[in-house]
Image (cartoon, rainbow, N blue to C red; front, side, top):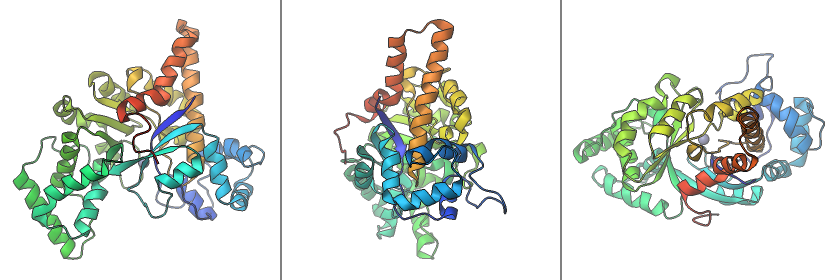
Length: 371
Ligand SMILES: [Zn+2]
């Protein structure tokens, strides 16, 4: 069964020393405390159990042996791990550390799959400001730039959760409010502050620009790195925004969602334009991902759940994202069959919806904009 990984990032091609590798298998921004290792986690155990054999090592090879073999294979290690996933399509978000990782075209080659771009709204606005855009021209220029990028990209992503929290004002800001906020942002940049966009009015403007274009809009939800205030990342905080955008033609994709995946399932049931996944959480819950995946199948209609790995940096996270997802979905559907007699053909149909058909419906047919 093919998989449409609708939210992921490129892999690092440079050889990785142990510290750099460990940094990429945790959402922590810091090394494990002295004398401990990020390998002593669900994801660390899953790498040793499932990725080691792909690289020709026995299951549960030591982290040292694993990393030595990985370095020996070079870029070949990523190709082996990626090509064994059965992922047919990547939706690649390029806005985070984009110069260190493979771009969509590079990922298409490494993974022997189609790669589609997802544009990060906040990054696009920051690039525009850094290019010297006058504050008074920002609204027009941003709209034009977004239209241009959407000729190829299949959707956009917002990290409002990181920058302002999801408890933002759901109303569309007025033009005057946006112009004043951009003017103030521009002045901060001119005074030597980094261009990092954290102004709620400007971010709301970007979101409404995407709504006006009836885009597929991905939102970071829930679990992430130490930069996020998790208590401001519940998808329920978006409820009024979802009410206001229901009839816009935009589709809202709630990413990761853990530990709010049950709340996301509720929103996916009641709002016709809301979808969600538990990418990221699947990898980091490892042996327990079976239960997390089963929980996504509680309230949410089967036509509203998507697959993503949210892999970033290392091919292991794609490999495990796909493997654990397939296993969890199969076990959940088997349990329903045992309990309630779900026929095999219906189980297969539901699995296909979640694996790729829902993503294809949300983002359009795979030919559009594929690398
Ligand atoms: Zn991501």
